[in-house]
Length: 443
Image 1: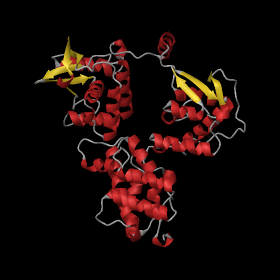
Image 2 (image 1 turned 180 degrees about the horizontal axis):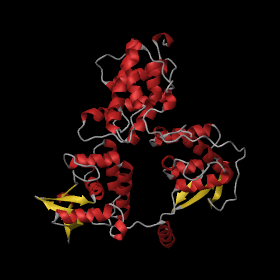
Image 3 (image 1 turned 30 degrees about the horizontal axis):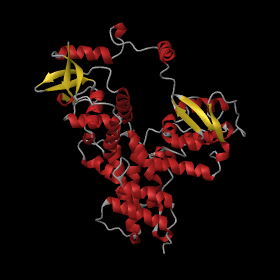
């Protein structure tokens, strides 16, 4: 074994990593990690920036003039994209890594310390011990619950997130049945900044959760948010960006749920120190929707009145209710892209007044169909604008991203994004397939 300081440019993310099997080159390996492990990769990159580097040296071997990474591909990928954000496979990820790089303190490392081996057999032995379990003590032994708790008590780390603290309090009120029921990632996303948290009446800094408004009022709005998230009234696509988050919180304000100026506290109060509050009108616990494994929920079986003209669309719909998204993301993504185009084409044939031609780009067809539906009063103006953004944007949830499902050799849709695309498009697609020309009263 030799430890050596190697230039980042000399390291190659392994296209034959056991995590994904044999791929063609480094760029496809990077794309796979970011499409199949995106949330983990984002978290890892954020941690690397916060810590100013990595803690464990990648395991590498010289092949030709470059060093192939055999362990530490995720770390090296994050460092490479922080060094060159334009190498990210999507525009959104480009912007993410570019923004992170701007937060780097001090000089960015051009080289990192690596464990260099020259024997492939030895590398396999190392990988076996690191990644196949404890092997009766031979391999790496994970901490048990007691060890983890000892670490937390010693260091103060791992004490939970904003969402975990809120969920614990709501469980004590009976608003949430048990810890783990609340979609924490979506709640953390919704309350991702102090600006948004202030609207709800909470603050989260230095690991401490505090009330900034009357606890009674704050807990009631948090109760409502929890119910909306658990019953899927609010899903990822609704709060994907700050515009969506603010729109949802504005709806709560219009209902009189958000704290007012009169409710603000002169001095913030720790979340757990405020007196217990019971729900004013206990409700029966909501029937929680289990995370679906297929793109189209089976509860939507009767959403469309199928006709002879839409028989192929019905077949694709049925397949999308059968294909497991986690196992077959490429098949699901391609089928969804085909379903979208055929559904929109069907709508435009039925309603030629929508103003899009047969040979127009898909983005224009989607946009014109949405405008026509909104003019007819079949979708809201707010939702029409959401579909317009989908048609004309270059984000992960957009027509341009769906083109890459089919035409890109390196871009692969992740299950999470496919679900978000469906949640965004489902109402629009159902209207496209259910709306007949005679139903429209467009001036």
